[in-house]
Image (cartoon, rainbow, N blue to C red; front, side, top):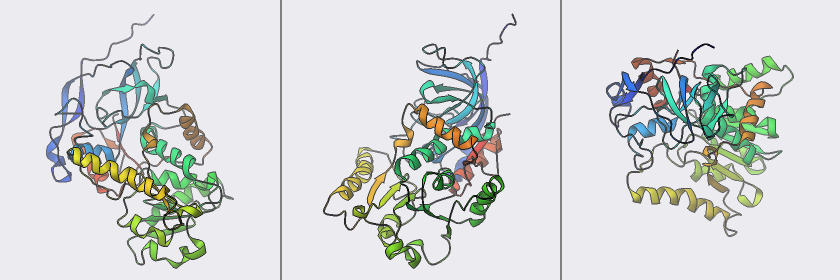
Length: 380
């Protein structure tokens, strides 16, 4: 029987030396070649990382603006990146039959996004699934957070016959949501983007697979051009939307939405994954209380009978990041991919190489908030 080689004792990784934004990415993000391998804790496994994808949480964590809630336990320096695909090196001894050494798996970050931009990473078993053979490595890295959230949003909030407006339709969550809306019964889909050609590209991909398929998006709105989406008369009166997804923290979205979105009493729903602002501070307990107030108070207020006739129901949705990720959710994602109704989108600027320059450029693209789909770093 061939002897299995043990992992090395040190690894290459990206280290963040301190907090900072785009202006200092070139200073704070550096490569290190002598970092000790992480030691898996209870309920964890050790992976040899093949690819890592970035998300808004990675930029927030690095910025330091949410450090009370998003600060790696290791302190500085820390390894950024959280969502990975990799090969199991050390299985979880508490459930040895679930994953074995050599399995290729997909895993989402836990606690704070960290640890992924390294040759080896400790992952939580409850947030991990076997990678299907039909999903390529870069696309697999894009799945754990954004695509899972997209599927959960669609399954929870879309009703048959809904007219749906998507703000931020070409980002990591939005580009996957728009592909699934008609699949679950939406009757009309409008989407905002600054890059109309990206929606066209997605439509062309799906038409190539099914010539009889109708459009995924019935109306594409370039938000850089006038008039604003809330001023479009084609979406007012009897043509208001039943559901609005805000994935972009679109300025003034909640303030203006009633012009095109039905009231709660008529089934109107405003669902956001970002809140009112793309960037926010969580530096002290007053910030925590303020954030919780924003998340909960508006939802409670719009649930009250006295306002249901004038305002849509509001929810800042965070349910897509539950632990564990249900087996049914993973199944929904993989079925949609296999049947061709869901294409995992990796920004064409990548996958970025696992080099100092490559990681810095990946972070800059993620911070720009104009990535097409997901930003991925490939280790090989």
